[in-house]
Image (cartoon, rainbow over all chains, first blue to last red):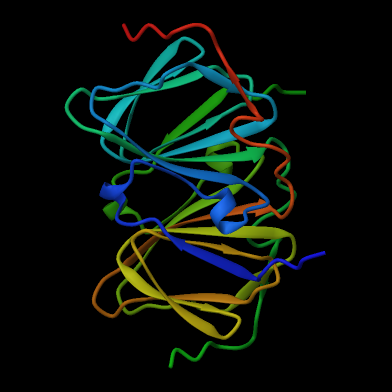
Length: 130
Length: 130
């Protein structure tokens, strides 16, 4: 069995240069899929969708738009974050005047066992920054 | 048993206003923990750490700095993305001249079963944008 490298890195460029990037394959992710999208002004998602297993977490990092969620419409803008349960129907639309930039995380619903203080192990050593 | 709402949302404000925000509790996340950090210019993480179970995914969205990973140091900047395996020791440092802004996702290593095309269910309906 091939052992996975302890870390992997990839450059996706300045946020404003992005159209759509998915990271699972390039980074070898095993706990989540992560995508960056910059939806052009006035455009909407091509279809409504839901998920079988995955919770989605949307992080809006630029622009503004509308988020359709099971028939409700909420405004989103830089700094809006949204958890969407797998069965919730969803679709996004960018504002007519500016593109909508967001990160979407897919993770298996209920899979997080522990985090941060429970999961982290603090080292006694200090890094040498060279 | 209380049923979780189909979606949840919280506003964390413009990216430049953020010091540190964690989303698990405010959004009711069950598949990942997500944090936003803006590390001030010249500052470094207070300690090296690793994890017991969680893969971490770092998304650098502004500024530049250095990432110490098991004794190796790599430069990071807007657009750098990094997967870090649980046992890898890690620490970050912001550039002396500008703050380093990043998102960190924690997810249970190996927990992702399927994603995107395998996990998504496309609806035949189109949203009414009102």
